[in-house]
Length: 277
Image (cartoon, rainbow, N blue to C red):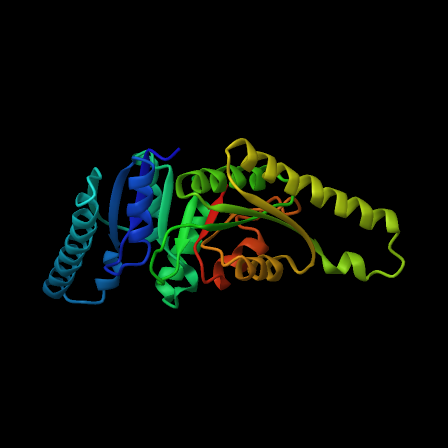
């Protein structure tokens, strides 16, 4: 499924162990990319600016070399690149140029504002799945939560989740959340509630069927509440190692680059999140 895996490195571990293991598991080529923005040195004198940019390039070479060494020990084909430019544009440009199938980078919840800004921009604009990873180490993927609302993007995310589950012998947990406000209207016709529950059953059944076809264990849950809260709650309940979800829900605004539920999960999740277009 993934022939080319891209990991952006800033010199910290972050997403590197995840990307290395993905490349190993899927027999992929790993691309280690370090991006620096030369405009940060524009306030310096010409000589100092040249020295600063040289230091950035050297730091990038060291960071990508560490990734290459780690991957090389596992026999993974690695490409290293140090590039300058606007970070998110450079990452996306590299991904398009190299035919990357999945991008891995640090989670916006990691506490580093620059990393968070880069992650969210890449997730919003990427045409391929993006795995955002907190700085919490890597122990594989045993439990994967898959939020679904029956949309095409949710179905695509489920396919990626099942592919992960096949490789890592993980359990897929499908969850459908009915917004609590629907239930709170006292004059809401009972038939509407029934229709929503039925939609939830159908959507989660689709994920379960996909898992069954792949020989992957799965569970399903339909709950009432605030979507991002319930997704994060389900992640805690299942001791999830990954949340795989579509970038937009069924009711997302047409001009939205990232659904509000997905963005809130990205910002608050303490486990990796796979966002799928």
